[in-house]
Length: 107
Length: 269
Image 1: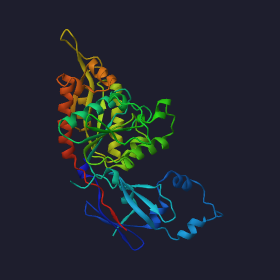
Image 2: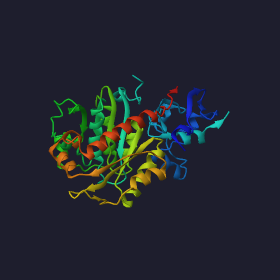
Image 3: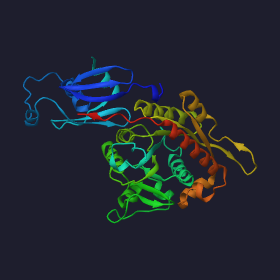
Image 4: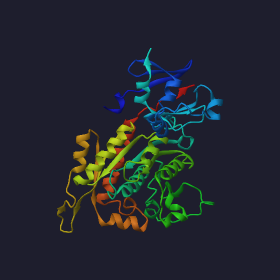
C-alpha cells in the first residue's frame, strides 16, 4: 500500500472520558482513556499483563494521586504513532495508528 | 517557509529530512551520505549532515575535521557549506564506544533535539547499519521526508536492504528510492568490470515498487578523497562518480518534493 492510501487519522479530539478519532476512510471512532491506558503497548506493561493478576498488589502513591487515567499530553511520533504521557507519569507507550484503530469502536 | 517537518523545535526550520540507510554495513552509506549532501549543496540547497552512526562515526574524517572542544565549539560544525554533527567530534569518541541500545537512541535523540540546525532545505542523516534503536528513535523523533536505501549489487547485500526497506514501511516512513553503490569499475583498459555483480539495486527497486535513484561506480579516488577529508564531488567533480552523485541529488530533490507525506494531526486535548 502506498503511503498516500494508508489508513490515517484526520482529527483526534478529547471527548468526555476518551478520545474521538476521525479517519481518512470516513470512519469516526471513540476509545476511552481507561481502555488506552490498559492496552499500553510498552514493554513493561506488556510484561505486566503476562503475569497472573496479583490481588495483593499495592497501588503506588503516584497512581492514587493520579486517579482515573487521563492523558497529560499526546504527541505524534513520526508518521506512524502517537505517544501518550499519562497523568500518573507513565510515558513509554507508543500507540501505532493501527493499534488506535483496533482499540477504538465506531460510533 | 512551510511548517517544519516535526513538532521538535530544533528541526522546525528543516524542510526535508532524509535518512541514508542500509540493512548491511560496508555498503558505503557514509560515503554516499557525504557526497549526496555535498551534491545537494552544490545544487544550491542549504544542507546539514548528521552522523547517526554512533558506533562508527566517519563523517569528521571524510570532511577533514577532528575533535573539537564540546564546551567551546558551536554545533553543528560548518565545513564546505554544510552543517555537520557527529559523535566523532567529541574527544572521547576515539576511545571506542561501548554502548547499549538505549544510549545509542539517546545520542540520536540528542542530535535531533538539542542541536540548532537552523534553516535547512535538507538534513541528510547517515544511519548506522541495521534495523534497531537508532532507526526507531529517528523515525519517532523526526518526521522524515523519506529514507534512501543504499545497497551494493550482490544478493547478500540485497537481503538486508529489503529488511531496512520493510522497517521503514512498517514505520510508515516513505522510501524515496534505492541507490546502488560500487556498481561497476572501468579499468585502465577501458573495460567494464562488475566486481560485485550488477543490477541488484535496480532489481530491489523494481521488486519493492520504489524508485531507482541511480548507480555509483567504483573509483579508487572515492576513498582517497574520503581519507584526505574532501569528498570526491568536490575534488573530482568531472568524474563519472561525481556526475552520478549530481544526477542522484537531482533525483532526490524530485523525490522529496513528491513524497510530501502529511504530518499526523495534533491531538486536541
